[in-house]
Every structure is written in structure tokens, then in C-alpha cells.
Amino acid sequence: LPTIPKKGTAREVGGPAGARLGVDFFGRSVHDVARELIGCRLCFGGVGGTIVETEAYEREDPASHSFVGITERTKVMFGPPGRAYVYLSYGIHSLLNFVCEPKGDAAAVLIRALEPTTGVEQMRARRPAARSALDLCSGPGKLTEALGVTLADNASRLDRDPFLLLGPQGDPPAVVTSPRVGITKAVEKPWRFSARGSRYVSKPRPA
DNA sequence: CCTGCGATTTGCT
DNA sequence: GCAAATCGCAGGC
Image (cartoon, rainbow, N blue to C red; front, side):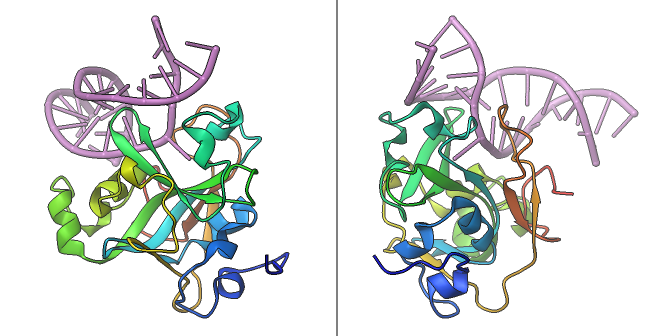
């Protein structure tokens, strides 16, 4: 494996501006990755947008599925980084995570919101309930519906089609942290990351 | 603007 | 058996 900088950034680890993110980008601290994904581009099947909100879930984290150890559902989190972990939430919504940390460390970043940029018409067709671009991808269940990500994409590689992940185009946006949404354990951890001032984030709006 | 509730499936106790 | 990393709609202010 190549040397990984201790204080890597999306730019350093992910390569030149706007370059496709490789496995090395994900095989690091899940908190660093969650923060640096803000401002990166996520497309799936040719549609998507700029990531504006993420959450970090680590191995020894009561709020993380990995807390119970290796099961049929969580085995992807314990596998190699740079893969998708997709699971069914509330029996209805497929939520998309990126597996992080070296193999065996079981950590993942939940992708919670995008600012739509590419294939907006196709996304709107998939999400007739959306009233505008502001609520097209403003939540983890909304964005998978808009992008067409399903449980069939669990364990897929993130550095290949149909996934496309690109580093920030220019200067990465300022990032703010806040408590994670919709959990009942470890609620005090400030492991939700979002682009400061973005109107495309989910509710509740970060302070 | 806000609050409450039903949908619908799975995974783990 | 039940809680769950959510969403959209209805209703009230």
C-alpha cells in the first residue's frame, strides 16, 4: 500500500482537483473522510451532485451497525474501504454509506444530502414529491431515490461505474459539525458534517 | 412555520 | 417481538 499522509486532504489523497477518488482516499480516519467529502461530487448512473452533508459512524460506536460485530448485514463494513454499504431503513428507504478505514476497522460515512448538479430532470422524474431542487436530495433516503441507488448496489466499488466520485473542483467549502440525526445512542457526538450555509442540507438545519 | 403519524421490511434479541 | 442512521402528508397555528 502507498504511504498515507497523517493529515491527508481530499486534494492530497484524492489526487488533482476534480480527479476520481481512489481506494486510498477511503482507507483513512472515517472522520477525516466524512469532512473531506463535503464539496466532492457524487454521481451514480450519470446523475448526481455535490455532497453537502455526511455523517461518520465508527467501529466502537453504539449508533453504528458495526457495534454488534460481524453479521450478514454488517460484513461489508468490516471489509475493504472504498465500497458502498447500502441498507434498508424503516423498511422503505435505501441509505448509502461509504466504507472507510483499513479492512477490519468497520467504519462508514452516511451520505445525507447533495446539491443537485447533473441529470436534474431524471432525478425529478424519480422523485415527483420534490417541490424544487432544494428538496430533491436533501436527505439520505431522498438522494438514493433520486440517484437510483438500491440494495443491489451494496458492496459495490466506489471507484468504478456506475459510481463516480470526484474531488473538489476549487477550494473546498467551509464545513460545520453538529449532532447526528435520527439516532438514539451516542447522540452527543458532533459527527454530522455539512457545507456551511448550504440550503440543500436535510432537516434539522445545522446551527 | 410546526407537530404527529402511518408506511413497510429487516435484523437482531 | 420490536426498534429502526426516514419520508410525506395532514392538520394546527
